[in-house]
Every structure is written in C-alpha cells, then in structure tokens.
Figure (tube, rainbow, N blue to C red):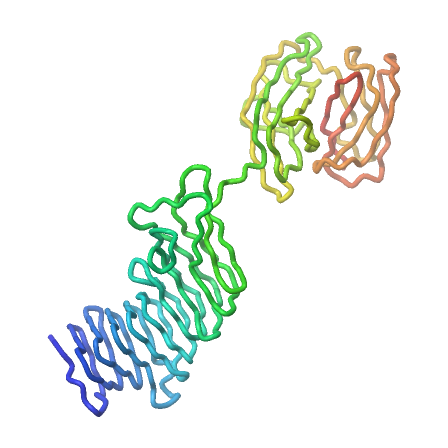
Length: 419
C-alpha cells in the first residue's frame, strides 16, 4: 500500500497503482500512470502525466492535475473508465483526445485545448455545484443533474462550457435527480448548461415524476439548456357528455357534449362499438367557435345497433395528439336502420342513400374526409316524399369518407368507402 508519492524534479517512468496515493504537496511528474479498480488517488499538490493515463479507479483532484504529453504520439492514450472528481483544475493540452466512459464529477475547472468526448457520465458539482469546462465538448454519454432548489450552483447543478467553446450533443441522456425532498412547482426553471454556442438535443430524458398536473419542458436555446416546470395544458376541458334515445321506435340516438376550454382543437371523431372493445368511426365534428362560456355539440346516430351501443369521442389536436372521452352506453330495442348507403364500398363513385319514413325531410348532403374537410355537398330540398338520394363523385380519391345528412335541425352521419 502506497501512502504517499514523493515529488521529484524528474518524471517517474511508470506508476501502477492498486492502493492509495495521496499527493500532499509539490509536483509529481509521471510518464505512464495506471490507476486500477481498487486504486484511490488524492491530489493536493500537482500531478502531471506525460505519456499515458488509464484510470479505472478513483482520482480526486483538489488542486492541479495536468495531462500534458511531450509529443503528439501519445494523443490516443488518455482514458477514464473509473471516476475523476475535479475540485481544482484539470488541464488537458491540445495533443490529448480525452475519452471517458466512466464518471467525471466535481465543482472545479477543466482547461482543455484538446477534444473532450464524454461517453460515460458527467455529474457537475458536489451535490450540487458547478463544473466548468473550458474547451470543445462532445456529449455522447449521460449528463447527470441534481436539483435541490431553484438557485443555480448552490441548489442545483450547472455545467458551464467556457472560453468561447461550444457544446455538441450527439446521442446522449439527460438524467435529473431531486435532492433533500425538493418538490418543483409550476413556473420553476433551471438553467443546467451554458455555452458560447450549442447544438443537438438529448435522445433520452430520464426526469423525475412531478405532482399531478405538472410536466417538464426542455428548452434547447442557442447558448443554454433550461428545464422548466409547467402546468399540463389540456386541449379540451370536458363539461358533459350524454347519450339518449330520441325515440326508441325510430331507432335514433342523440349524443350531446360540451366543453369549457379548447386549445389547439381540430375536432371530434364520434366512435361506436357493440362490445366496448372494437370501435368504428361513425362521424366527425369540427371544433366550433366559442359562444358564451362553453362549446356545445350535437350528433345524431340514425343507425345504432340492436341492443347495447357504446359511444366515445376522440378529441384530435392539430399536432396529431388525441385523447378520448369517457364511454357512454345505451340500450336500443329496434335493429332496423332508418337510413342506409349503397353500394358501400363503391368502385365508381356512385352512391345512393335510402331513407325510411322517419328519416325523410333531408335538406342537404355533405361528404367529408376523415380530417373534416368538405369534399362534396348537395342540396336535396325538403320534399318528404323523397326516399332516395343519388350522388356521383367519381373524382374522389380512394379512401374512407363521412356522409353527413342535414334536415329539420337534425342530422345523421354514415361511413362510406370509395375504392
């Protein structure tokens, strides 16, 4: 077991350590330094490595640690698979391409004129604190940030890339750990990294769970990365959703729903199921312009199943996100349809709508795609004797469409397929 390394004016040719070394003062100059898994080195003086560093154990630098090769031939010989704690200054000259698959931590400073690539874990501070890296920095491992409050350096970790150098994220992970029971609140923010310039985004985010209704936001700015805690924006605030039989003999179901707030809302798909597991879209309602203090919607299904019918609403955002309403059920006695479309599917674009007596009085027909865009419309008049409506739409692209029939303050929607 080595308790101390006596400094000298000449370099030691080779030091292979599996024990404990404490450099208490002065300068120690070493050509090749291997610190094995059980090795522990504490630097309170000055340690200079000339040719090769292979750290598998622990190096704690409280003062001055230099990777300073005599020539460029040793530029690929600098590796860390253990833990290096920098509380003083770690200097790396331009001949060094330093690769770390281990852990780099501490509240000191790296002065790097060479290329630094982190393939392991960088953990700024000493729970917490700031680690300064004055050199080009490539991140392809993990950045571990500890947060115990909203004050930088003293309450949460900061990685600072100084000396007008840039930070580049390749494929890497951001992990955040909360300290001392700290519970972030809405509006809290943490600037965890600063640089003269930066690029890239973390491929994996490992962030702690927040209180219900809160979420993390990661801001990738030109010169920093900031974490924010924000209230979750709900696209739609549901007020009510009901289904009711307009007339059990007529076999029609009315769906009514209302919302208090709508943000980024494209509209609602109306879905129906006979068993509560297999769903089909039977209609689409575009988001409305707000009136009074709420939004009110209505949809009439003239073709429910015999027996139990399950209904739900699929709310769609403009960015493709969606959420479902609660499921509503209703029992219908009749199994006959009051309206049907044929042929369905159609290969020619010719379709016919057959109306039973209770569904007559239709005033217009609108065909929409599944995004709610109108692709065809036709006025049919108000003749109650008209029991067949024929439409030709040969130019429609193959796909699934919604046929909406309007009349006498009621409407129905059917699904139709063009081959």
